[in-house]
Length: 255
Ligand SMILES: [Zn+2]
Image (cartoon, rainbow, N blue to C red; front, side, top):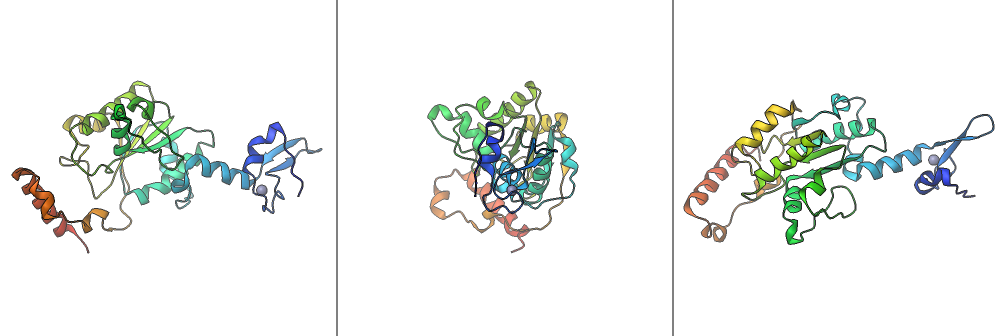
């Protein structure tokens, strides 16, 4: 099959699917009376959106509509399970086109970026490996930043402050942020990223949204028990707290 490469269609050229039956592998469709215009083929758009959104978001269930599509310029605090939220995120991002610059991150990556004086690397979600050397580097640039909470699984004294600082950097830059917290790990006292200040900040400056859980399934942590050896290293108060948490988890479990 003939492959024509021109500067104007470089993106399409890179993106085209050589097996596409719509464009015969050209990556674009010729338009106009004498074929003077070129429009990207659906195979090209598919490639570009997949690259822009990352595999996880792109592969989420397609929706016909989502209230979140109209909210990409607003800061939101969303209570939703990741699986239920991803289709809305997919819809909202596609509605902004392939050039829209968003970033999906999480509390763990924010902490890593903040700690990066230790030369830790953090991986950009759904993308090739990207190293952020500071919190500001991670959070400031995207037009929309999406922060999934609940990835950090240990108590870290700095985390609530790091989250709050990240949110403040965004707000100071006049850019919207979506913070997503799961139903299983509500953002209340005891959540590793929670602090009274960050809760107040989210309540005052972010629109509140809830997506009902489509399914009550267990979290990865419900199958995990702390072995005795680990608890020996904890002080009594912490060990008692963990015991209570395990009891609560067992009571709530639908195993
Ligand atoms: Zn095509």
